[in-house]
Length: 119
Image (cartoon, rainbow, N blue to C red; front, side, top):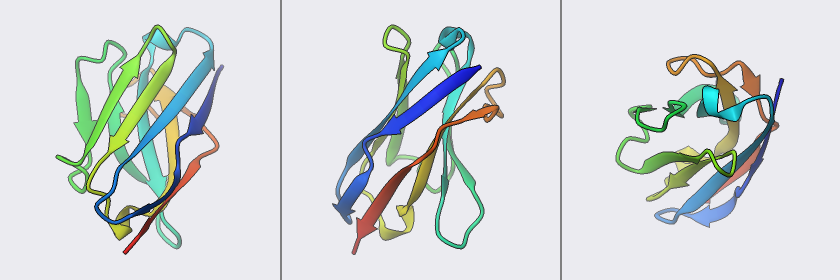
């Protein structure tokens, strides 16, 4: 079992930046791919970014490529999502995920953190 706790959400103006963090605990964190999903009001939950357990491979949704960067620090059992040039359409609850499959890491879910981007 893996427990995931997100932090770093908040309110920011369009064009601004935020960095989300996700602290993992439980079983071996280093063997798991990690990622982020988001869900905006009235919309389906969607993939945002993923990172392999080694950190050498990353994957991004087209909507965030060039603006968001995912990274991890296995010594701290933490994954990050640096979000730059934020847009109002990035407003959503952001969920951290973990799992054995890099292309589909969403076996375990955090509770989510709200990100609101004002225009």
